[in-house]
Length: 219
Figure 1: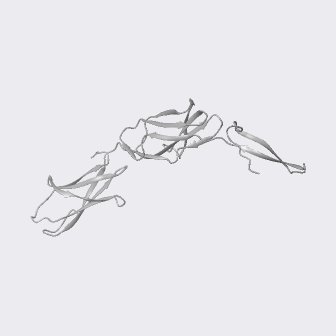
Figure 2: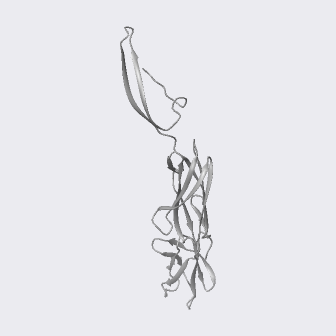
Figure 3: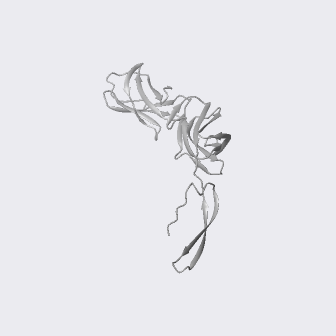
């Protein structure tokens, strides 16, 4: 026996006791009971802003997410990893479907951050957006320090190094000799260096420095 139950006869979430009776041509019959639990649909959550992999130098951020449901959204919570381990930050009570929630967070630190929204409907169903979004805040210029070696041989190809770092990521570094651009340097962020091979043909004292730029153009 196939029994089809749908929205026409199961209109509410909860537990239903289903009774099925079978009879034969001789009038014999048998009953069977089964417990059926009806669970509603989870909310659909979409992350809007800041967009995934966004890079910004603005420390006051507005998080925006949308949610919809087959019934009605009751609240939306913001989860992130700012100044804490990843977890709940704040919850906005809201009603309707679809809805949009905005969360304002001020004075966020530099670095890589992860966020998501958790939607609740009025039947206690919950759901996050399918995947977290990540973004970068960068308000600090790169740090460029020591150039080495400080003594090289005339007309000999020599690898010049600079100690370089950035709180997020470097985009480029250039080597200057006595105020003139020598050329681009190869960046090795894991080692904290940038290097370029040079050859100087005339003897004398040279002033060397490296200028580095990060992903937001700070230098």
